[in-house]
Image 1 (cartoon, one colour):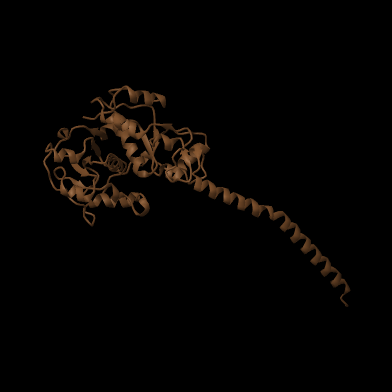
Image 2 (image 1 turned 45 degrees about the horizontal axis):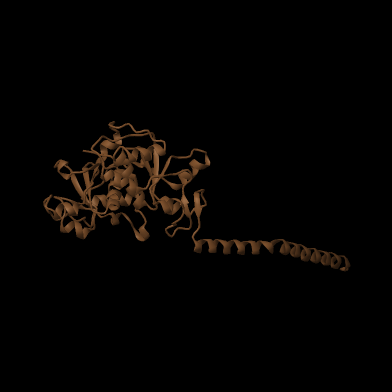
Length: 334
């Protein structure tokens, strides 16, 4: 059965961002996207996807589980693969998008990231097992099986239509700000990152203008202690983001599947926004980047200080040359 956090603390958090919770109502998103506390409640028709490393998955997992590590969604420099590349990836795991999928794992961010990507890609139904699959297998609460490794070639064509409405891009958000249509933003990063006290190696710290802070760590603790009550839709849509696509999509899963909220995710997150000349709140600059910026500014000012004298000197030389040419031309014999 799907569940969301206990009614006390999370209700206070969501009321802080203006959300009105109606407990017990079933949202269309929640029917397709939710957490499960107990694997025994999952019917036999569901396809299990293991988000752990291929080595862990192939060693011991749930029955007929397909190995789909979170790392496989990224290319060099942790670049998230394109929609077409991810569709090909899912095809190598034998998925076509029409299955009901249960995502399992140990690392909660990896697990929720894979679940979120499957949902965004259009998977018909996605459930997330809240418990750690390794613990369940080692404790003999579930039979131990070897996972099915991904194929090197596509086994089936992934044909589901992606839920692109659940994705927002940076330029789209910037245009919203430019037009005065400020989105309802939830920032799932740490408190230090939100207030610009920890830039995490970015060129600047802070958060998107007007964003509310809903730390993923705190919310996840509430979800793990949640009561088995129906999903709770609220006014939306919300736009959620993290530092990167990895933690941002995981936060999207937590808010969408855990709370049943109408949610979009800014995939690139703060890692992209921090590099753009776009507005931000609680802005800070790490020392190394601040020194570089100051140096560039000083160099630019120094260069600009020579522009006017250079122009005047050039005009003077051109004027003298023109005058000399004029008089020489007049003295030239016919």
